[in-house]
Every structure is written in C-alpha cells, then in structure tokens.
Image (tube, rainbow over all chains, first blue to last red):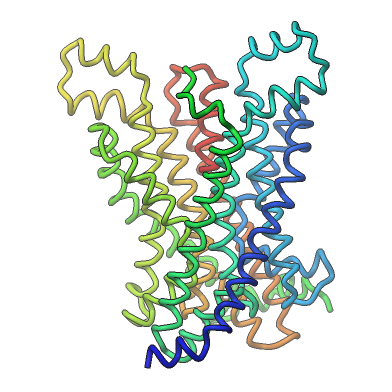
Length: 216
Length: 232
C-alpha cells in the first residue's frame, strides 16, 4: 500500500516541495532586503525606534493563519492566491529581522565606531563596511529562525486550500491515511533543517573573522 | 461584500453552541490549560538543567527542531492516532508549548548574574538555596518571556486545531471556508479575533515580565534581554 502510493505520486510530491520552497524562501529574502536598510535607519532614531519596534512586536504575535486569511482584504486577492501566504510571511519576517538588525548594530562596541571615525571613514562607509558586518551574526541568527518558522508555517495554509506540502496533511485527514501525513511531516522538517544548515554554512563562509574564536 | 458583516452582527456573538463568545472562551481555556501543563513540565526541568549547566546544547537543539515541525501535520497525526477529543487536541498543544518555556528557563538560569551566584555560594548557601533564592528570581524575566512566546504560539496552534475538530476561534475560519465564497466575512472575523487575542496575551505577558525583574542590571540591559528573548 505504502509503496504504491509513494511511487505513483512522487512527481506530485516533488512539485509540492518546489512550491513550498518558493513560498517560504522568497518572502524571507525579500524581507531581508527590506529589513537591512530599514533597520539601519531605525537604529539611528532613538525614540522613533522604540515606537516602530513596539508596533512590529505587536504584528509578530499575530498567528500565521490569521494573516493568511486577512490578506485578501488588504491585497485585493482571492483567498487561494499564494501571494497572501508570501506577503504574510514577508511581513512576519520583516518584524523579526528589523529587530535583529537594530540589536546587531546597537551591539557594536563604541570604541569600534569611534576608531573607524578616527581613521577617516565617512558615515556611510562606517555603517556599511564596519558596523553592519559586525551586526551580521545577529541578523543571521534571525534569518535562521525566520526561515525555519516560515517553512513550517507555509503548510498551515492548507487549512484555507493552499499550503504546498500542507496539502498532504489535508489529504491524510480527509482520507484517514497516515502515510501522506508522515511523508509531509518528514519532508517539511528535513527541508527546514537543511535550510537552517545551509544558512549556517553561508554565515561561516561570509563571516571569517568569527572562526578565529569568540571575541570577549 | 461587507467584510466586517459577520463581526458586527450581534447574532454572531451569542448564537448558542456556535457564538463568538463561546469560541473565545474555548480558545482561552485550551490555551491556558496547554500553557499551564507545559509550564508544569518545563519549568522544573529547566531549573534542574539550567542550574546543573548540562544538556544546554541539547535543549537548544530540541527547540530548533520543534520550531520546524509543521503544526497542522502534528495535529492531524495526533487526531489520526488518538482521535478527536481532549487528549488528541490537547497533547500537540502541550508538546509544542514545552520547548520555548524549557529553552527560556534553561537560558535564564544559566545566564543568572554570575557575581550573585558566586557570592551566594561563598556565603555558604546550599545548591538548592542558590537555585531557588538567587538563580530563579534572576531568571524570572527570561522565563516569563518563554511563557509569552509559548502562549502566542499556542493561540496560533489552537486556531489551526479547529481544522481537526477542536473548538475555539479557528472554527470561524474553518466553518466560514466550508460555506463557500459567502463565508469570507466569518473567516475574516475569526482572523481578526484571533489576532486580537494573541496581541492581548502578548501584551499581558510583556507587562508581567517587566514586573518580575529584579533590579540588579541596568534597565537598558534588562529591556534588551527581554526584547531579544521574545524574538527567539
């Protein structure tokens, strides 16, 4: 029974995996591209930063399914449109990543910023060449959390009819079969852990000074 | 279509057996019970693991894996194995609530101010006294942040649990979807109410977290600690 089902539907499942990856990764990347400049701007602005981060904190508490369901009202899409899922996840990712960028920038020791200024770095260069790279470990940690969460969250959209690998859970429930559910669970968790490992590798590859041992 | 139609209709709120008020209560009960049971399991374990300063990496590893589990999958799995009912629905909620509380408790205990801990030991306090009277109060803000994270997560999972037959605000979404295109206002009402509930609980725990702080560290460091903990 299990073998037959697996063989017959491999291409279907592979298709779901592809959808799943796109629905999770694209929003995270988009959020990263938005969050870095946004975080840089916010970290400079004191009181305004507190207000913005508080609003972000509120948005971050909203359950993914609620965001998926409410998006059509704000985007003008149909309920089955994958754009709802992608936008909701990007929104969630921005709330987390901006916080990480701000925290990362704030954790740069003042002596480093002052040394850079003393060495003649202009404000912009100081930010991009000195402070931002030092903030990256915090940002990478955030990217890992957000990516894993996004991959798990995409399948929740199966409740409203989309959801990539989540479809397997819907099928399993409606037909009372364990196989699709187990396949979906294993694939999603493996996908998430692979993505997490990949990001960790990228982090190690692009931040070589961290390899020399932890700074004090 | 008036998207707010269902939410603003008084009949929706008090309908017997299916009204919004009932759904809110069901959702709250499921959330509070699940987080409560998870806390009873996770806090003592976390205190032991954190105080002994062993197994910390394992706990973080478990947290990361737990974060990657698709909640719908776990819910469907449990229902197929155990059937719909208090255990079938409640068990996955508790399972998913434990890791954030455990991780936060362990981290809080481990990062309790070392100076205070050493001083206490030097003064002759037994390990139990050190754990309970020094490390635990210092770990409290972190622990509350963990409870906050768990509560928000359980509200979200409970919403999804309606798909497998549970009650709660998720039923508005699931039932509304089954009605067809005309059911969207009901779904939207569910989304808005669940979001509101999550936000309120989040704010509540944030306030508790601020109250529980022992005034040792600088306010800025404590605030940053709280904020960072809520992201993890």
